[in-house]
Image (tube, rainbow, N blue to C red; front, side, top):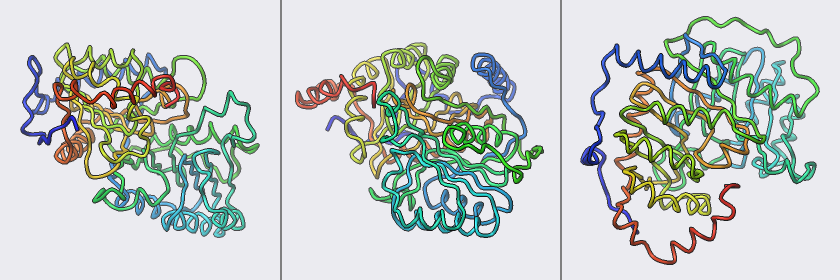
Length: 413
């Protein structure tokens, strides 16, 4: 294996790179945030909102109780959509919570991706539908033209009473339970949001619900006004399953081109095109410390891992550092830039997320929130292995052949 155990605090900075260990001073941080905010607002065309409260939730032990508590306390509406709704006790808990609220008179809508949620148990669907939960399917493969089958809804959204929202990378399945203690407990990040940004997350649900259901809203939608709940500035960006340049690509490009000191990327599936490989290399060459944290020995999509590994040699030669997470599947989708801006949501750094799928991500301008995500990243690096450029260059011929074999399908991964 072309890796070596490396502790993050022992990693020397690459020649010409700044470590970025200390926090930026207040005026410099504010200037960076203003500059990135205006670039994102103008180039994507979506205004950021102020006064949001964001709470990062790490792994199932934090994520699922927070989501379930919110559902069980719902008084008016629950809107939920997910790509993955599989099996296990957690799948039952969500079905029972949604059904109980529907029986209590709460308007409950559940949107499932027609491909990703296929393993859901029929008895759970029956339980929810008998209770009055409105269940809809996004683009069931059997009902689609071949052109649409490759475009999926990868968004993970829960909105309760129009006031509290959750989004991030977690699916509803037992793989996400626990605290990443072993290979059966996946590592992931979700976010609880309160404040004006909830509307952007709710819009992501509404956009996909409108494609699958005749009724977009009813008398139980109150269209509430949001008061300030915190200090985070948030832009909610939606990626859409269509052709051409997408907002997710613009979002990622702006962040990489705006970075001055440090970029940290944690992603479950890394299979970018040559353009984004070039953006990463350009950042590293101008002195930005670029760290990419990826799944290691535990991955649920080996073919996607191989597609990304074809770029490792070029990235390492540019000075990008690549880490492989060892304890379990790394499923988080988090990017932080210069300790002041962060990106968290459902989108990976692969062609599928950037070109094909419905995604939603939060661009957050908040030093405190970004600092929490950076701290999580440091803890993850402590149990990860750094890929050494020399050793990777000497990887076996069999590994190179496998990388080349998946190249023709890389755009679909």
